[in-house]
Length: 390
Image (tube, rainbow, N blue to C red; front, side, top):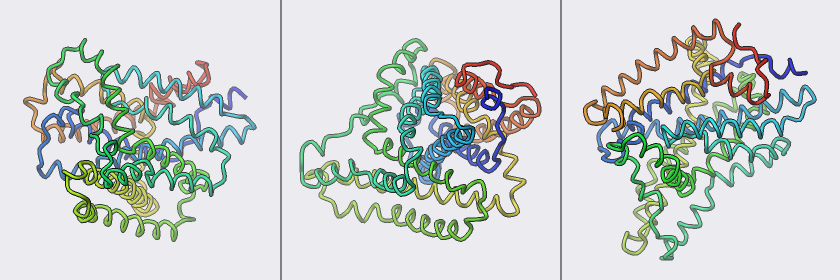
């Protein structure tokens, strides 16, 4: 039984490819943001429009969807062995939180510390009905908390029109000049507080949980195991999600114009933008996923599979990217935010992705797991007998 648990699992290359796209998208957003420093003085140029419209929020949403899918794969494999994986999964999330804690010392925007505790909420849903999964996900995606606040804001309620706590975030400016010691302390304390306020006040927490459940449901259905079985449904969903994305993007300004002005309801228009922005992110992410599946099941399968090794090292590369680029951009290091043009940084980012792709391909010719992936799995099962070298 131990050998069955610790043996290297069979890979689904489509799922690994999706993870690679999530990793690539998140990384390029980080490069665009100079790991958050950009937001100290954002510029409304074409690059800003492209990244905020087509990448920000979408790559993160895809990463979240893949997390829910991974939960299903782990639990399903354990079920087939007649093993209850719930306790082990909870411990696995604790280990991920520790990795995230260490990572957040360098980059406070670390997402692992958010995904790990929220991942525990998935456990009771493992055996929930399909109707419950989709029903709860729909309610969460509707953002009832933001809708309630919007109702209060339009009505002129003082509590609903208070500026969000995360508006006062001083991190981006702080990172420009902060010495290493001060940055480490700030990241552990105040930096995390602002991050969590952002996830709460923008509805990201509900969005994460909803996409966890959607990923679980898609895994249960076998959507990525046998995508050809869902060709008609997939194309219908692609059309519907594209229509929703367009409606949310184009409808934001007209709906905001109908809200009371900033004097009567300071937060009303901002909340409408937040709501429609969140729905736009999720629907456009869905479009991306379905397009990737469409291309994967067509003539581009071999080309897309070249990305799969990167998807197998998502955790390692996600942390490594911060360890390399934060000291380059931040004031305690090279301070590149002052002298490295954004366009140049993005091209360097593309080049670094190519290097990661080559490294991952070569790595898996010799190893079963990426370095952090092996540590995470070994810690999950509390044994070093997890195979590493081929």
